[in-house]
Amino acid sequence: MKNKGFTTEILHSDRQSAIEHGALIKPIHTSVAFGYKTAEEICAVFQGRQPGFSYGRQNNPTVGALEQKISKMEGGLASICFATGMAAITTTLLTLLRAGDHLVSSAFLFGNTNSLFNTLTTLGIEVTFVDATDAANVKAAIRPNTRIVFVETIANPCTQIADMEGIGELCAEHGLLFVVDNTMTSPWVFRPAKTKAGLVINSLTKYVGGHGNALGGAVTETGVFDWSTYPNIYDSYKTGKPSSWGLLQIRKKGLRDTGASMTAETAHHLSMGAETIALRQEREASNALALARFFASHPAIKKVFYPGLESHPEHEHAKRLFRTFGSLMSIELKPEVDCFQFLNKLELVILSTNLGDNRTLAIPVAHTIFYEMGAERRASMGIADNTIRLSIGIEDVEDLLADFEQALA
Ligand SMILES: *Cc1c(COP(=O)(O)O)cnc(C)c1O
Image 1 (cartoon, rainbow, N blue to C red):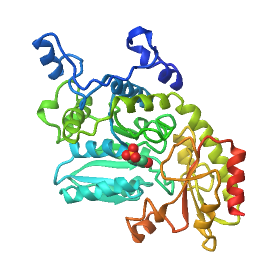
Image 2 (image 1 turned 45 degrees about the horizontal axis):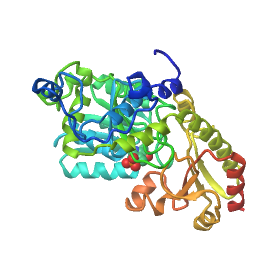
Image 3 (image 1 turned 180 degrees about the horizontal axis):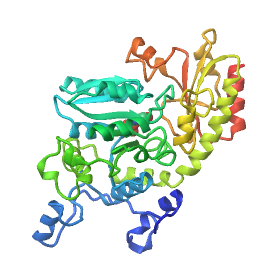
Image 4 (image 1 turned 120 degrees about the vertical axis):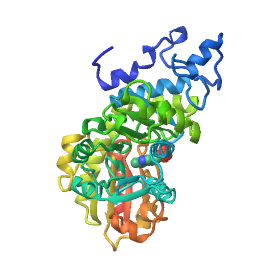
């Protein structure tokens, strides 16, 4: 089956490989170990000469079916799933970086990724944070020991959009690995391979799952990067085409070392969610645009951060690259408006972290998820005490508008 639409591909991906009884959905295989009839066969599987399953930490048939689905979504060569999005990021970077290496990262970063990068500095890996909305800032930070440039597509919570075209070109020129965290957009809205990302990371917990009932993460090899120029690949993983050495090392060494594997039950939940990603994100984006316009004209609101508004600094950039403007937005209330009072008046919208849930969620970020990083770093990221992050769900838009309207009154 070639060149079908995004949703068609995802819906029919499981049955592309034979499933017992003609089942349409890959079953949940809970076996940790897999038995072989001959010594030759088990050795061939363990040495990667024959496809097959070895041990549940490294691979599993149900997880494998989800990995194929993620690869189709990203238009990539192959993917590896992990227990969480953070597990995907941690395992990838710990597998590819060594003490003495340098990482350039966007300064506008998911809080937990920021925390991880601070941990990397304690291991002797240098990290420089730059304003990645302009590739010139990334260029200025490159050093002889730079290995990786890491950005998020749309930053959380102030929705800055990285200059992915410029950074992709720059990385190609300098032979650097470009890693893009695509969580905020999802592969339906944007494929980072288009802008020369070598590896793409997704937290499947968010838009891919969509139902807030399972944690998961994935890393996808796009085929863009030539690993034969990358210094940290061990000889034992330099087998087959150089375009897939990186992912092989992450699966063989990374997943073994961290043990951050996804379970079959989780893969099943996420796989069911993945079937409707385009439908959900279309609805979320249209709800989000209606709400952003409402907030932009409301007297209690000082600022609205949403790439779909023409006033957003990277609006044209988003229009060019993304299929929709997404469903993450932040609002900054006027200083005289009591942020907690507003939140407490919301009846339908849920006070909760998480993103990409079918339900609309609101959280005061300075007091919660960005609390630990301190006021100075928050200010540098554009986060005020009155900033509220919203993840817009699939509810009927009239109900969302009515709830925000009464809470702001
Ligand atoms: C949530 C999130 C992660 C981490 O994902 P988990 O599945 O919660 O570990 C990473 N990056 C971004 C941009 C996220 O929003």
